[in-house]
Image (cartoon, rainbow, N blue to C red; front, top):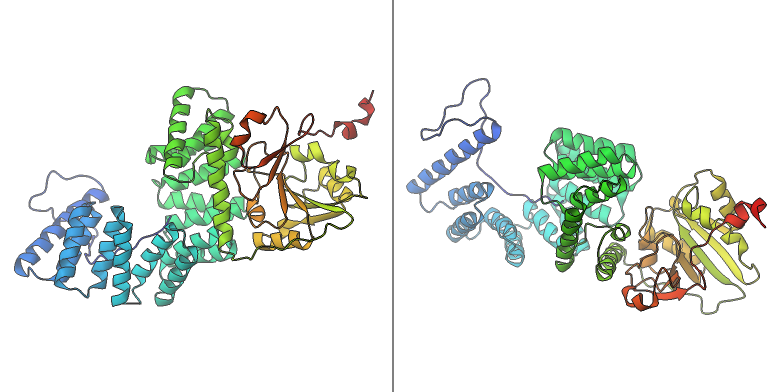
Length: 514
């Protein structure tokens, strides 16, 4: 989430330990702080209007009144009032910045960008405009420009919590997780009750496989703001990934109660209910899920349904391919900021074909149960085998066997940077690189997006299309991928004669041979 900053001059003082005087025209008192603040905002509006009666051409008062309108959600009125402030004082950077905020709220992004730039021409060190313009640049996909602007805002104002948090989010998007973590911590140091920073830091820790740390961050965010729907949804995702499905369902339902229009929470809840075989209102749930995906694809947004989960739902082949394509494009966006030139490949193959298998599942996982003997069954006179593990050693015999029977076994979990991991693969001179994850847990498709090998293939771990321009072939069979549906795959289909789905039973249970 990006944090937009608005300059507000109104100061509301909460007086301790005594009854605040009610406004003269007050209605019967409402309970709670929110009602109290609403009443005081009304008084602020009244005070500014009285001030304008005395001094109609006071630009600062117009600007302050506009800020109060903005906070009340009266965006059109705020825009008109900001414009009046600027008309009275054309060199008023704060008013331009706040006008830009209001225009952005209305969806007028081009006009908002112009106003931020005007504020920065008037005052190049205007930290709020730097931060808010960076938010726009980030949304437009100009990640490097956004990063530059966030850093400039922090150079001007090092204690700018929102800019630290926004910069951290951009760094996380680029895979620079340690740097992101540092800036989230800075944001929280500056603003200890920054619930959004806690929640987003939890996302970073989750990506770093620090599940306990992520859980603590989400819990703290909810303690600070119990009505924080995103934090409840993030907490649910931790429970879901840990197999605590009932807790995940409860947290997703809490998130949806707080924020009914929350597509990610709705689709993840649908998946959890499917896991526990809760078919209550299934037809209505699927109808809504399909409509959510249709709207997101129509607006070119990242769908809330994951490609792997899309196979579980009554979605069309076209929708499934489009979901995969959008996730593939996200991988390309992530590697774009690395500015890596295209790799060069060996001009001659040499004596042996070099094949690299890439998987996060070299261990006690169904993928290894099926293919653990594959590395050792290749004809070594013709093929040189490399296995690239994306996960740490789990100490099982499955991992040991694959590592022992591969000519080269490389643990890429020790190289978290996708660019450096791709460099390692390319330096090995791989001819064919096999993606055994697809969109399953632990995948690092950004490595394939960098194209470290001339031919890249999908096999075994994921039966659907990658939707990716950087994957050339899908090894499949005519049952899994009927020829008449070839157009629903972005890859060329390489058909095995019987089935692509190998098994290791002959090697695992030799005593059962006839």
